[in-house]
Each structure stands twice: as structure tokens, then as C-alpha cells.
Length: 620
Ligand SMILES: Nc1ncnc2c1ncn2[C@@H]1O[C@H](COP(=O)(O)OP(=O)(O)OP(=O)(O)O)[C@@H](O)[C@H]1O
Image 1 (cartoon, rainbow, N blue to C red):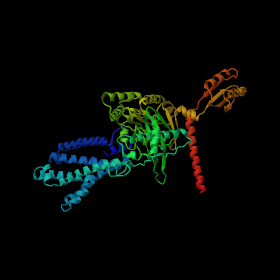
Image 2: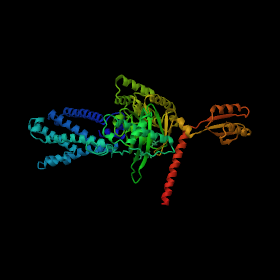
Image 3: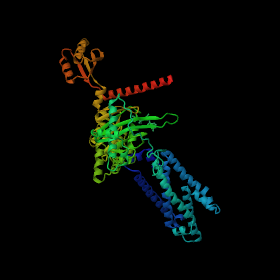
Image 4: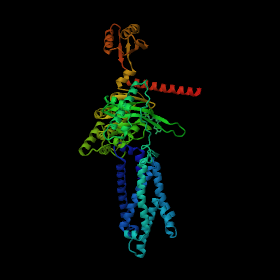
């Protein structure tokens, strides 16, 4: 049981289920019920088999006594396991500790505890204190059962029944009482710790359940207000920041001026009202996601400084928009998606998804969210179809609708033929495709895809793209990718993210226009015609620059301003015979060029500022 729970935690399966709408309470109820049923089956087999081979502990004891004792114990064992599981994040460690516990308590029972049980003068209170350890209470209970059966066999006394245990104050009574109390206490404790501890660390405020607690409920710092530094050198990013601020102010306005709100209205200053009213006129509607200056800092360890993975991200994503977040390795894209999906908390700032604050209403957000994580989170023993059935049910799909959704999803990612194959037998690309299908099932309103096409062959990638294309018709999609071709094909808007900052934002064509600004004209002629070609190009654009020439092949950069592609075609074609042009071509800047340019600029800026810092330290 311990390995099972820790496995789901370590592999982030639990988080994956949570992100698809399975709340903590249903998760634990289902898990608990599963373990109880499993344990009951085990105990029934155990006692039946024991009786069949004539073990007196089973044949000479009342069935009701055995059943009550074993039932209480299995429940205690389950809550104890859940309690222990909170402390582990690695399945191997959990399994080893689990075995040490089982074998250790089996050895310690007869060698350590038994002498105290048999010693009538040993204080019972101390013995009962030792039985707080569940392995010892089990041992003592079994010891009592065997004693009762021995009495029946040797002295012919009547069998001990439940009533005798309760009224006569037999040792079994204290064992049962200890186990029942522990069952309840550990149950609450396990649930409480599970809520505040994430991967072995305290993730939420320890007092979050107590109404009198003034502690920050989610363990993050809020950075409300309008103190975001707007970098005027990046007007697109600055505009996005402003848009977020305005939208948030609008949301505040709506709350404050709602008829039910009285307290906050008093704190609402006049100037804020002015801004909000002005902004009300602006048409920022239908935003699926509004991120407000989100930051993520990982605390430094082993003497290393803190890692600023996301340094302040303000972003809006409209309904039915596919937004592509591009960036070099380590830029902070995954950290951002982790915050958006509730895998980790923002260090400061927050985001609103369909108007719900991710720091306050993440549970509700999970019910209409889909995610395709960077690393596939699937159960090896379940088939592709079973995965989709499971996640479809989490999204409240039922009956024929569910069946149809599963078939459609499998078809969309070309896995219909492999529907009944266990995912453990899937290739890397197939696992990726089933992850995409999982993220889209149940019509989530917002879908996050972290490098969805990694490891896919070109045909599968194209099919995946068309699945994403049709999916975005009725939902917002946030996609991270290293493939510029993919970003160009799928994304309505793109943001390039470097070193935790958004460096630029816009549609692929806007970015190309903004960072390209020129066309590349390549002309190949016999070498003696080179000068003539140069003259022709100067006629087309007086600002053309020759960037390259070798044995008759010349390359020119033509500033786009004032140029018409049709004119270039016409002029080159009409001079084709006269100048003996053997080949010529005109190309635009690619998204890849934009990416490299933006990333290089950002990196050189960082280096520059680091150098400046170093210089100022030296000066100092
Ligand atoms: N749990 C963590 N603790 C400390 N640092 C972390 C943690 N997770 C990520 N980082 C660091 O934060 C930075 C951003 O990481 P992140 O995984 O978000 O980048 P990314 O843009 O998704 O990279 P890639 O494209 O390679 O997936 C990296 O320098 C990484 O080393």
C-alpha cells in the first residue's frame, strides 16, 4: 500500500489526476475504499485457508471476534500507511522502510513484546503505550486470540465472544480501544499532513485549516498593486503588462461594485475608480487567462543562491487562442506551467483563469483544465483507452458521450488501433500522443501543452498539429515548444521567454515583421554581370545592402519598408534575359531567425548587466 501511494506521488500521477479534476477527498475515499476491499479479501482468504488447514486460532475462536479484530486492524494499517506515505517522496525508500516495518515488527513481537505481555507485574499502562505502535497491537491481539483458543482446547472453556471482551475487561478490549483511537487520530493526522506537505516539504501554511489562523493560506506572497516595472524598450511586453493590470483592475471594480460588497467599497480610492471606469470602456473581454506579474524563485540549497526561474510574467490569453511560449532551455517555461497548473505555488503574483484566482480557486480551475506535461504521466499497466475512460470520467463524461469522446480522442492522435494495448508497451511517441489526447478529453476550457510534439515522427507531428488546430476552436491553449515550425503552424500569438522574462510578444507574422524588417534577395548570374545586377537591385531599393557574393551569386538585404514583393518579381523577371539570370530567390525572415535574434539580444543584455555589476563591485 505504501509503495502504491508513494509511486503515484513520485510519478506525479496524483497531481495529474488532481489537475484533471479529482479532488483530494474523492482521491482518498477511493484509495481508502480500494485498500479496505483488498484487505478484506486478504483477511477472508487468510482466515478461510487457516480454518481449512485446521489452525486452532481460527477454528476455536468466535468468527465475530476475529472479524472485528481484523477489521479494526486493517483500517488502522491503512491510515498508518497513508500517514507514513506523507513522509516519503521516493518509492524505493518507502518500500524498504515498509519491509523493515513489517519484518521488524514480526521479529520484535515475540522477542521484545511477548515477555512484557506474559509478565503479570509489568505495568499495563506501559504495555499499552508500546501498543501505540500498530505492529505491537497486532501482535498482542493475535497473542490473545491464540490464548483464547488454547483455553478452549486445553480446559474446555466456552469460546470468548465479543460480549465477554467488552464486559469482562479482557486484554483484547484495551487492544481494540487503542487501535480504534489510533485509527481515528491517525486518519485525521494523515489527511492534515497530506494537505500541507508536498514532496517532503511544507507546501502550504500549517494552520490553513484553522479559522482563527491569520497565516497566509497558500504559503505564497501576494504582490498586489501596480508597481510592475514597465520596460519601455519592449513596447509589446509593456502593452501586455498594462493590459493585465487593466483587466485585473476591471475585475476588482466588478467585485467592489457588486451589490453584495460593502467593506471593500470603503477602501476604494477615487483615483482607482477613475482608472477602472476608463478601462471599463476598453474591450478586454473573453480573456481565458490573465497572469499578473507571476514570479517563481526556487530557494538555493547547498550554498547555491536562490534560482529566479520566472522573474515577473504578465500575460493574457484569449478564449480560442493558442499562445506559444518559446524560450531556450532553462528559460522558465516549465516553472511557469507548473504554477499555472497548481504543481507549484507562485512566489509572488497570481493568475486568473476564467476569472478564478489560481492561488485561491485552483480546485475549481482543475475541473476545466487539461494538461499534457513535459514528461508523460501514465500508468504502465493501463491501456490507452482505459486512460481516456478514466480521465473522461473525471471530467464528468458518461455513457455514450464518454465512449464517443474516447474514440474521437484516440482517432485524433492516431492511436485507435493501439487502444487496447497497455501504455507500458507504447513507444515514446505513442505515449506523447496519448498524453495529448488525455489533455484534450472532456472539453477543458484551458489546455496546457508542454512540448507536446517532442519525440514524434513528422507524420505523427502533423496529425498532432491538426488535432490541436481543431481543439483550439473552442478553448484556449498554452503551448511551449522548441519547434519554430510548430509555433508558426499552431500559435496565434507567441511570447519569447528568456531568463525568466518575456522578451517579446506578438503573432508570428508581427514578430517576423518586427525583428526581420528586411527581405533577402539572392541572384545568380555569370560573374561579368554582377555589377549590372547590383544596379538592378539599387533600382528596386536604394537602401539594399549586399551581404554576400561568390562567383556570380549575390545576396542582398532589402528593407521591407516601401517595398512591394510584386514589384520585385516584376523587375527581376523583366531583366532575366538581359542579365542572363540563371536563378534567383526572395525569402522572408523565419521565426527561427527571430528566436535566435531575441535570445541572443537578451543574453548579451544579461551578460552586459552582469559585467556592469562586476565592474561596480570592482569599483567598490
Ligand atoms: N525545483 C527546482 N529547484 C531549483 N531550481 C529549479 C527547479 N526547477 C527548475 N529549476 C531551475 O529553474 C530554471 C528554469 O527551469 P524550467 O524547467 O522552468 O525551464 P524550461 O524553460 O522549462 O527549460 P526546458 O526548455 O529545458 O524544459 C532552470 O535554471 C532550472 O534549473
